[in-house]
Length: 402
Ligand SMILES: Cc1cc2nc3c(=O)[nH]c(=O)nc-3n(C[C@H](O)[C@H](O)[C@H](O)COP(=O)(O)OP(=O)(O)OC[C@H]3O[C@@H](n4cnc5c(N)ncnc54)[C@H](O)[C@@H]3O)c2cc1C
Image 1 (tube, rainbow, N blue to C red):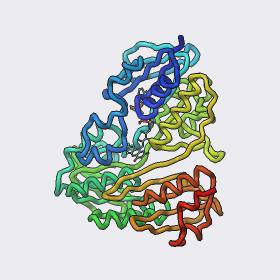
Image 2: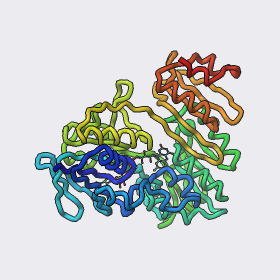
Image 3: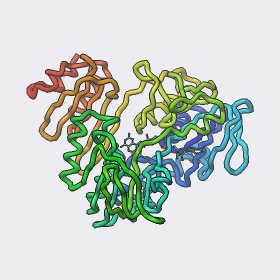
Image 4: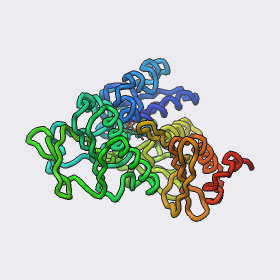
């Protein structure tokens, strides 16, 4: 009987153990989680949960009883501190060691924080990564309060949308030229800038934070253009870094994530990795994808291979974001795009990214039909011409016909 140990009880870890069991593996499975709650979904932490529209139990990916019912040992409040890949053991925070036959790392990522020197450790400065963060921050969301959001990526924008909906005064600073610069085309940035401005959010681009002001608690902020703001609390949304410290104790190859091959195996063939912490191979390049869809798919492939199958991981990236009444759906990865073509629909619009003649990705804002068309075209490796996309008379569904 063999023992599979999975470290990191989040989206990928939970998917991995569930798939391992459902695909017939009958050995021992242990899932180790540093947090005190069963694996849960993070996206609502900056959306419905933060807004107060969702109970904590609804975040859980599977009922707490699922793990025992499936003979999976779930050890919460437990940190894996080291891996001895020769002895094939994991050291846990209670000092015990756990032997494994196969190991999977699904340790996720950690948010970038601001240094103490710029006020990053003052009270009232929050990150949004886990349930504890969301619970710590939620009481500050009181109508009339002033919040500064640092960083104009999806998480910062979603938190800004929640704050604005709850009646707070919101200022968002983005040091890049435009919000969403790292992840989206100017057309998508323009769309979300207008959306936020129409809800009264004060978006300032090409302006960074010089420092947060206050003795023990944040009370203000000085921006790089010299402006000073009164602030009741601040949210830092300046990206994440993959959680690779544990992998390094095992001597695994790490390069902006735990390096995995197309079978989700790390540089040690008995250790697999999946989710935010792991690299993957996409269009011949080694990258990381920070999304729920990737965490699930990559983890399920790891589970199958751990169980003895021979499955290659072929990522089909997709992502979403909710801001106010706008649902953004993204299919594909736009890395390397050179043109973007806009299609207007009755309910919304979609932005189609091309490299030459090849369709790479679609951002669809309140436009689920064109999202589905784009997703299926990308999955099939088919590229309509940009003229077909922008022509309002094109029957988009017909593009799917062989
Ligand atoms: C606020 C927020 C909003 C998001 N919105 C979206 C969205 O709209 N759409 C989307 O696709 N994606 C979204 N994401 C991203 C998505 O949630 C992540 O990509 C996904 O959770 C990654 O899953 P994971 O299992 O790799 O990591 P996680 O879900 O982060 O799980 C990793 C777990 O490992 C644990 N861990 C780490 N090290 C150890 C250790 N040494 N010992 C024990 N346990 C350990 C951590 O405590 C954590 O519980 C969002 C993320 C956040 C934070």
